[in-house]
Image (cartoon, rainbow, N blue to C red):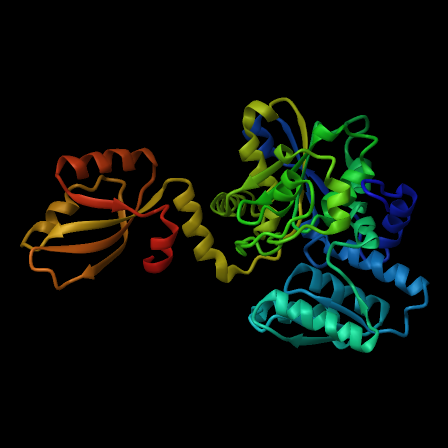
Length: 421
């Protein structure tokens, strides 16, 4: 593979070989999203693969080619705390070859257990380092010391080729004669986007592709702006399946033909809103990275989507439900249904009752905490308020000001919010 070029014959071979382990993931017309944006919105459901993500495709293709090259007697290694580890483990068991998965010590037990379940007796899990970079360094050191085979998550031609099978399936599953006006792809390290755009570069013009990254991990967007791969100094790990500090070298070569403006940046709290809405309305369980392409629909808006045929790749559904309270909280804040204030109330009888009388019929207190009790005349209170309509907060703040109530809205102040909420 060179740059944006993907060998279609090799991809079609990989697609046929994949049927050894799972059928094609469905391409589904989503009625809810289609009505919402007055378009035909199709979802490519990679969350319905055996490991609930597309990562199994690249891992299988890598192993398949390694087996053909005489690699059956070797040990395979990967470093991952997420979907790559699970795809790797599944394929190790399929080919009955030993694999070692390096994970950070901080990896949630649920992910460790799932990886062990997929790999069974063929997998050894080593917990090393507090962060991924330490874990990855340990995995590379082990490979150099033992001559094992490293299976990278995205920056390898065989991985990209395997992920490109998503594109081959999409075009065979669309109604006859239908061609997408827009194809939306989530981006982390760039393996999926490289494979899909490379496979379809003759069928679709460059402007038909929409790429989307988390706002807190815009590695591709910044690299395209710089004209070369750059490493982000800081990454927000909330969208853990796509929070990559540096896009892969091969992946950048494949994607450098796109403009930075074609890479949308999805706010993490907007992704939370997508997760909550799709779970409540559609019963669809999405991990944060799996919600990226649907969040992109909201960013694009009806004006750009109206009347179009749109395909959005849902990349994964490995959601840890222990995160659900945090997702709900962030979704409500993003949608304007929840706010946090620091209030300055007089230390006198009746002051609290006077404040409560300012609340509207649809306003509900979800958090109440004294921050300072020692002041003689005034006290500071942290209060969280939920409501049913964002417009209610405009009226509430108007009443705050009319009552000459000292307040500070800290909902979007990340430093304060992280310290005291």
